[in-house]
Image 1 (tube, rainbow, N blue to C red):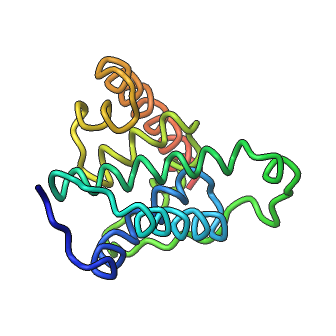
Image 2 (image 1 turned 180 degrees about the vertical axis):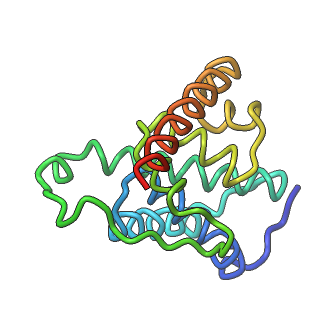
Length: 161
């Protein structure tokens, strides 16, 4: 049995990951912050018994995706008009390429999710398939299609510069 650190340490350790995934899903800073808050509230309320650190991270990601989907399908979100097309992106990695990140954000949700989990969170295809409840073949296909879309978008962007 895995005994995690105190809740404050868990929140501190995973706040960027949860926020980044929430932002990728909803593309809105305020909603991403609300989603992250709800995820950690559920963690504190439920205090799930988990087998390992990886299982904890996977649980947090799954809950983040579920909360984001619930928000996007709620009647409230269908009546909201965004103030801007894109909120500024907060990337904590100074080596990160914001053009690539914006290109990832422009993808459909199913492609954004697999790209974020594979490249930004370093999950394997089999781990992503478990987190997203999809087959490994579906994940591989979505990764392949997402890479092709990103290549096309980035080539187009670079040729315009």
